[in-house]
Every structure is written in structure tokens, then in C-alpha cells.
Image (cartoon, rainbow, N blue to C red; front, side, top):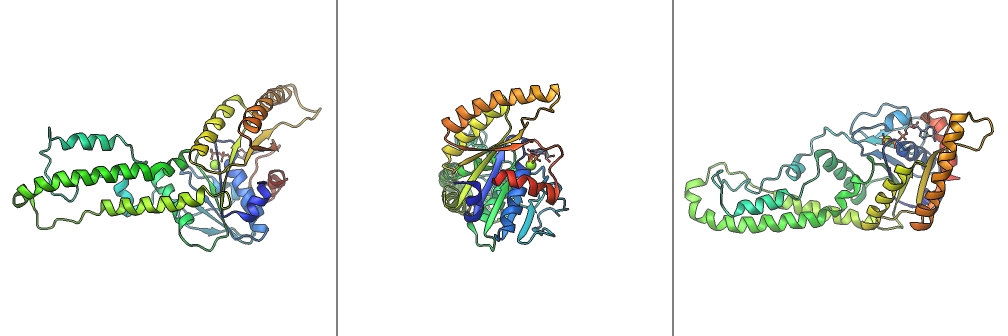
Length: 327
Ligand SMILES: Nc1ncnc2c1ncn2[C@@H]1O[C@H](COP(=O)(O)OP(=O)(O)OP(=O)(O)O)[C@@H](O)[C@H]1O
Ligand SMILES: [Mg+2]
């Protein structure tokens, strides 16, 4: 599917790739284009090191969806990495003994092996967990936007959560097993250890709900009629390997990808200085490899974007950029 068609028809588009290759620039110029073609568009930056506001030339208060002045139908949101993740805090600091009133006298007890097993399945970091919740909020719950564009953090990690349902099933299974073992023990020791203000442990419910919600989001994210991931890269050797890894990862999670953007291309121009000519030569060499690996190997369409003389920021430049992105 061509990017133009995607912007007019899909519900979700994600831009991702290596650091500094032009993800935010592509995402914001695409968002302006879609909004000006009548789609009520929300652009969300899930990268805790935000630059979406800088790109659009507007101050975006953290965590607040803000209408972009001068562009109809466009709203932007930078997730607040310091926001309270309240009940999901359990995800990053889960303690299976919580709520059981068991004192820490468990050294040598067989349950500790289960516990170690469980903590080796590393849960997402707090930044990642919060980005995940925002992605879920705007994918699997009702909202008024026709199109949600995600400007993701450098390479891949945003989608790591898609394998969480399986990991969570592992955790939930282990938690249940431990509860059972503990339950027997607790029966014996109840009178000794039960305190009056025992708080209710809802970590299992939270995990179950999170799992269901990720499974629903996964339905949408893997549906090519709803979502597409656009990979952005530059014509350098290191970017080719990293893009290959990202494409493999997206393939593993069944995320549809039809386009790869090659950004920052030196144009064929006789006026180039020696330094730029040499850069252009290097880029030409890498473009051949990109054709072979990305276009023929992975079967992706390439969208080529020139290196501009100036930084791409704010409305006019982003419009100029979008003409190349959508052409
Ligand atoms: N084709 C281009 N020509 C000139 N400058 C460009 C081009 N594309 C992007 N830029 C500039 O390069 C810089 C990096 O772009 P951008 O912020 O979009 O990258 P990013 O991939 O989002 O980076 P990060 O990984 O840090 O989020 C910005 O200053 C942007 O204006
Ligand atoms: Mg960025």
C-alpha cells in the first residue's frame, strides 16, 4: 500500500527506526498531510526523549493532547514519562508475596526458585510500560480520531510489548502456582501471620486485564487494513543492518510494513563540493545494497527523500518534506 493511501485509509501508522534518522520529521509531516486531507489526526510521541513539539514548533505540555494552531484536525501528544502509572506499577515491581502477609523468612524455601525464575523474565521498564499504556489507550479503546500516528522511540522496543501476553501468561501461571503452595502453608501459619489491615492483592486481576487489552491491541496492530509500520532509515551501512533487524522483528510480530523511507539523500548536482560528492558516492553504494536487501530481499517499497539545505521544522518545511514523503 502506498503511503498516500495509508494516510487516507488506515487507523494507525507507526514511524520507527534508528536514532536521528528522521522519524519525528516523517511522522509530523505525514500527520499534517493527513489532517489537511480531512482526517481527524492525533500524533503521539512515545519516545520519552520527546522532540515532537520542537518539530511542530509548539510547546506541548507533557501528557496533554494539544490542538495544533493553524492546522485543522491535528492534535499532538507527548506522553509524560513521569506520569503516575498507578495500578500498573505492579508490572515493574511485582512481588508475588504481596498481600499474603508472609514475612521474609523464606530463605531456602523451594518457592524462592519460582520467584527467581519469574524475575528473570524481565518486565518492561517504567518508560516502556507507560508508552505501552498510551499505545493501548489509543488503539483498543474508543476515541474520536480517524487516524493515530505514533512517533516511536529508536528501533523496535515499542513493539516488544506485543509479546507480553505470552510472558504475562507465564507470570500469571507462576503466580497461581505460588499462591497454591503458599495457600497450604498459610493455612498452617495463618493465626501467626495474619494482620488486621491486610490489603487486598489485585496483581493477578491487573495482569489478566493488561493481557486482554494487549491481545485486543495486537488484533488491530497486525491487521493490514488498520495499521502499517513505516521504517525510516538513512543510506549508511550500519543503518542497513539495523533496519534488517527491525524488519525481522516486525515480521516476527506480524506487523504490516510496506514502505521504508530512505532519508537524507544527496542529490545529483554538479555544484556539490568534494566532501559532498564523496558522501554522495558512499550513499550510492549503500543504495545499491538497500535495493538488494530491503527492496528485493524484504519486498518493501522505497521512498527516497533528499537531504535539505536546512533543518526541517515547523509548518512550511514540514509541508515541503511531506511532498517528498507522499510523492
Ligand atoms: N531530509 C532532511 N534534510 C535535512 N534535515 C533533515 C532531514 N530529515 C530530518 N532532518 C533533520 O534531522 C534532525 C533529526 O530528525 P528527527 O528528529 O526527525 O529524527 P528522529 O529519528 O526522530 O530522531 P530521534 O531518534 O532522536 O527521535 C532534525 O533536526 C530534522 O530537522
Ligand atoms: Mg524523534
